[in-house]
Length: 547
Image (cartoon, rainbow, N blue to C red; front, side, top):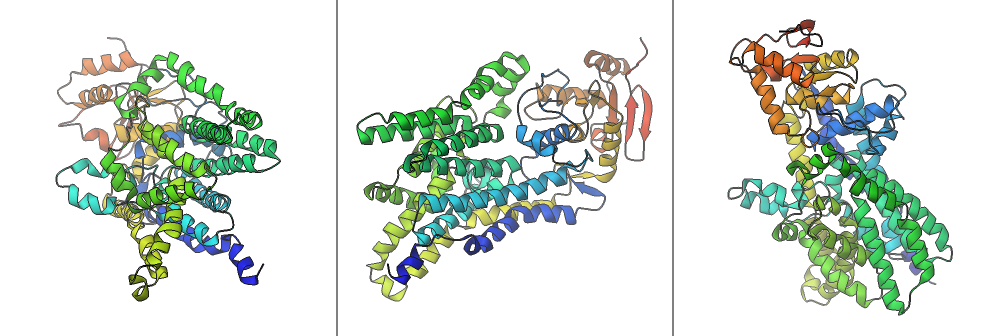
């Protein structure tokens, strides 16, 4: 083989993609760093720029892991919840902390950065495995998966006046699971889940092509189990993709490949108990069933026009690349992943189906790279325009055309970090100090009445239950918030407040900045003052007198 060809066959290296990985790290984590370094006067960053309602759940799992827990205990409602096997990623991560020191938001953001780097390494392994001996294709696929986005950046300003909520209907902007940058800006288990999914499907490819298929299947089984415990929605995606892939191989071979099907059973077998646990067993508990059926837990896919705009140019390239992929006889896993995953997102009856988009950008970007390098650029090279504007310049232009959407989201979050000096991004430092004091003086038997911002933040640092603290995990959150507002209404009789406290078993009342927003006059709750600063007063109402 000539020296030039040997050089061309070398796969893309880690050194070659390091600048792009660092750029992705700056884009995804830069807004967080800015929020930590430049908080508004008197405020402290909560660790959340994305999914703030859920971040407190992940922080509470870190705390529970750090304090010795193995099963997650929900404490966002007065009703009792049974401990359950969930959020194991954060439970285990919490055990990495040298001591339960309460710095969970910072540790959470560091986990996000680590997850982003892990996903980038897994992505490099994926493009090398899916596109062997094609360094240019590998490089293009890496860039399109890492930075690719659709036309949401263009459609949002044009449609916002007519449809204020259009931002959330454009998945490259308003859905955390589609593009790599929005995944990296989201909670850490998103990025680690993406890394595990990429490694899992690499093992599936090796399982089919390698004589040591059993070893690759065993590795895939372990990765599938870890993935299901990290990003639970892939309990649906993995069996679907692997199952369709093995059925396609059987159809191509006109026989049942029993050995490969046995490997597939080895991969999917560990997921069956988890499917039963989350799909059947947990639904026996009324509180969990109410959570799964609540409007807050229904996350439908974007409308078809939103998806078309959301995938934009990479989507067009992926369609062209998928057709050529079939014609060239390439291993079908990437195409199966692309189509089966898309089918699952829009399959009727699947709640939270938008969550299944996690990782879909990997096969989309892979096929888009194939479409660009194997279809569009060869066609362009035969056009007259190529004499004036080289195919290399056209390639750069098309790549840059896929990038604006992922540049917009970090800018939006960075602007939020500097312009929205309030909850959910920040809390007053005096309030956070009071919450930490309360956490040190309460136990799992206590119930705290506070406004939503404090109730949402407290479980990150303390073990007591809160009355109304989370969008999905507080049963009848609107009703609970109405009770909180009624409690602090100056027109509410003192006897009614006392009856409410007894009815629910409240043991502490928190009165600070956000509680005062409900007041139109002075309100003095019952109970004994146990903590008082100019900003916050905390009352112990565990032993209210009768009458």
